[in-house]
Amino acid sequence: MPDMLRLAAIAVAAALCAAVVRKGAAELGLVLAIVAGAILLSASLEALSSVRALMDLLSDTAGLSPAVVAPVVKTTGIAILTRLAAELCRDAKESGIAAFVETAGAACALCAALPLLETVLDMVTGLL
Image 1 (tube, helix red, strand yellow):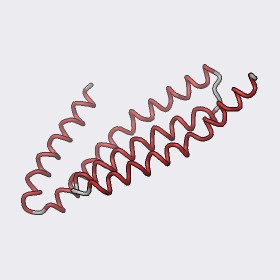
Image 2: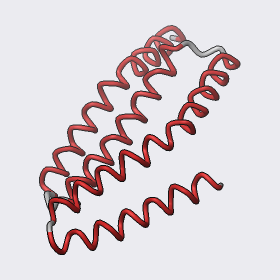
Image 3: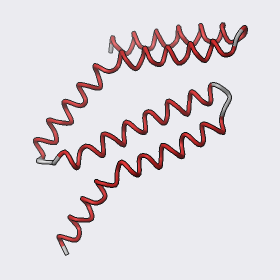
Image 4: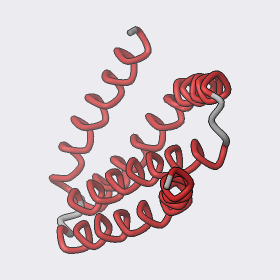
């Protein structure tokens, strides 16, 4: 909880600074938002490594192969990156580009999930 409070305080401070800076120079406001996002993401990497360790433990306990778990992790990462990129585009008043980023993210997520779908298909055909 204290980590989230710290991250929220950084986010609110950066948002207020960006709002003030945008009045004079919109480009600098966008740069400030990107830098704040990078700081917040780097601060949350420790939490993500804990999640990854738990995912590895759960997959080992359940007997799942990395070929099944990896596409789920990749798809989740693609979804997070797509959301961030689309929001940055919207923040820069480029909603058209944001829509293309979301479409590209969906296509990449489907490609990343293909090995999982192939594994499911193999399991289903094995049961028949």
